[in-house]
Image (cartoon, rainbow, N blue to C red; front, side, top):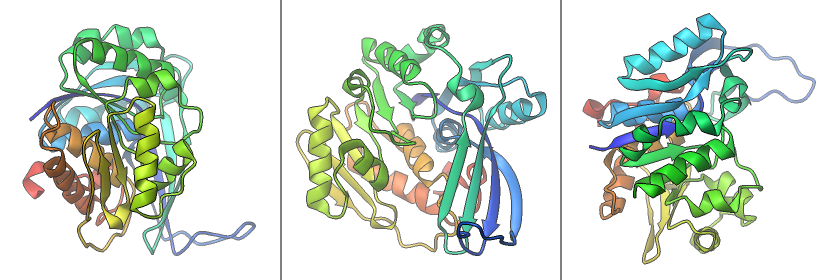
Length: 301
């Protein structure tokens, strides 16, 4: 298995289970309220660790002692090296507010807090950690310049970089994409990145071509129940998802990315097998509620 460093977000998730999304101006009874660890970075790191990778984390929490201690404890209990996590004064730890319906749809609001407040010099201070990793993984819940610095260090030591462009934005710096070996958007994120709706394999190929032209060697588009589309410089294909009853899609994409980083070879010669493994992991996640509580362990695979 691989050594993985995740640079990313750490959030306390506050989840509401509701029958359906409320319309504007409406009041609705909530079926259940619960809190759990979350944040795309933390979710991806926990997935990588539970699925066999030696995992390190670079990020930040706030000075809100109860929340920050809870988040760090959850990561440490998942056997993640937390020496790269700073505690920032005058900041709160990130939080996400998640609404999940009976049909399995969700809506998420995120307050970045400390996740958006750390600086590139914090990343540089952990260059040895990045240089020793097989893959460096990042998302868009932390500053672009911090991610670019991490990817520059990884590239300088011939290490792989995996970018999850979420939450999606249209203003992704070209230099960041040029430092990205593998990009993993979902359908919505792929459309926001490229302006191309993802409706069929032709559209997916167009999205991939546009991202290849900006310097990304491998494009994976996660398609929920339809599976995963992949495109490299030499091949492409669509790998079906497993048929399961989804109750909560929260962290499914994060599980996929953590799983991928844990088993993919540096030269990507097992890409298809790694995608199938990651699809299986995500299929387990969507059958359970919550973000980190739903992420599977290797023994469950």
